[in-house]
Image 1: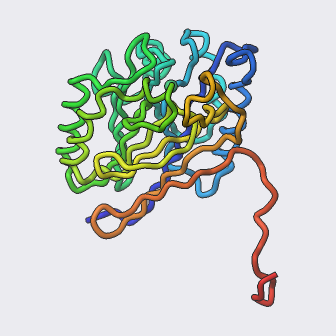
Image 2: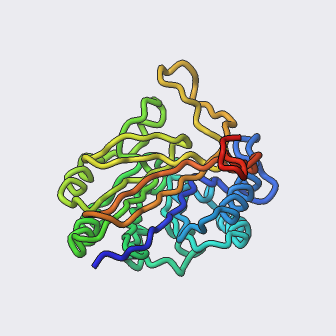
Length: 280
Ligand SMILES: [Fe+2]
């Protein structure tokens, strides 16, 4: 019997936390950017059931950066889980967040999280010392096993590196290099309802293996939307946002919709209708 309660998963991405007082690329105050996103998440109503951080939690990475990150995340009033990105270290991240339900005791930080009627599968696509992503053979085998273990439950996959091209040349050469090994697994398991990535610091939407696939914008700077190799790799301080993946139970695997929520305070909400029921 399918549980009847919706599940709301917030995703924030690419935090790039430096040691206190240091700016990313000499310009971006990533700690303040995270504080603003945490405030927006805390205020959001309905309260998300879980926050998934889709990689690049630290920047260099160092122990000091993870300690700074942990101090910043103390303010987050919601439970969270995380996958590593190319700016992370598996070992330092595991040490910083030892409470994670990691599938193996060392190496890849893969996790499966059951939340109401929904399964989240968090895949570690990081490769030590490299900007690109790769899913190791044991990770792919684990994913296949996990997906086969509960074929009737809808599942969302989270990983840092998008398994598709965005058209941004310098990002596309550092995406998930073995995406062709992930696609057949996704196709074999119709319970996969969404593939949610980070890494590119921009919102994108496409399909992969026949499934909706998104990139969540960063909480800080955006990668310049350069689709013609016009400029050297660059960033812009565009409005930051988080994603809210809302799952609603229903026929089959139910339905998932992704909302993009800008970070910050905005005028409103204002009612459309007056007390007489007429449009204002
Ligand atoms: Fe990244």
